[in-house]
Length: 188
Length: 184
Image 1 (tube, rainbow over the protein chains, first blue to last red):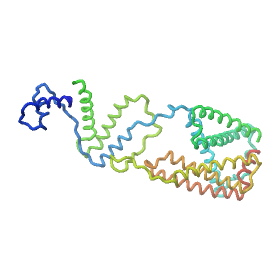
Image 2: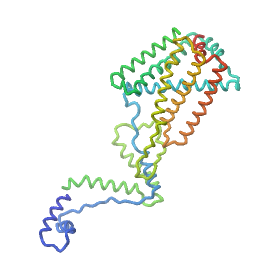
Image 3: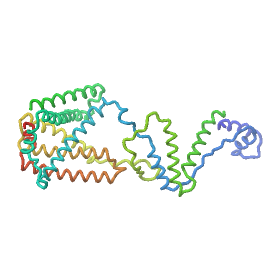
Image 4: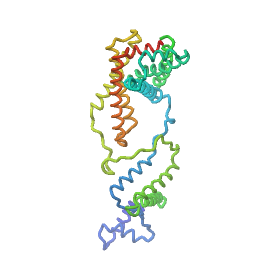
């Protein structure tokens, strides 16, 4: 039943003399009309304790939809083209530095030989192809992290976020890092 | 007119049914019935989702601060943890660029600049690892793991700092060592 309609009917009923006071007029009007259907509200509420309320909210939150999987995003955009690979390469180098630093400190205890002379001798004894590929495996992340970090520092000044420059910059950095890594492997 | 009422009625009835289920009849059984009701509701709702649910990790424990109706608290602004730290981070990163290019250009570094390079690398690594920890171990859900990871990182950084000091003191220095291995 529409509220405005009830109001209209109440006004119509109100024009006649009535024993009820004005606040009972709408209800009286509804009751007077036999064909009127009463709106039922079957919603019931229960009081629950505060801890139950908390656990209910926590349980509901666990069922919320999560963000879509990474595959729905465009891989040419900033997150994949530069950002996450900067973190992966940087994390690998920092992890390597940490492992080396801690191992150098622990070396006398375990009798390891990781001084520069013995490492150079061990590396020199490897076959040429292995040496070259190991060097490239070190040189490419180094070059990529170095060049891409400059783009990140540019991004930090809120510049270079147009779609075109993100795309072309990504490919340019990929190319430059491969070229400089090959240069480091071949000519240094 | 009935056609206008019907959707509202339908919604109310459905809501009433679900709240009656969700609220539970007695308080001691409330939690159990709440959980089963949510499970049932979520499976019904799943039919309306177009993409499949592929969680990388299960959702962690949900921490609600304050009452059920309180908004999420806004952290106290702190430039030491915010903008100053951010600028310091970038300054270290920008400073590393000439320090890593210099050995290529000059053919080597003197001990002072080599020590400077090691210090900058250590600080850069430390703050980088901190960023990774902050990103992947949310403090709201895993406060103990966050604290543990941070202290583990502090311990590791101190250990590596001593190790690098020993290396710089007793060996040929970082750039020279890399050069010798590279040319071996």
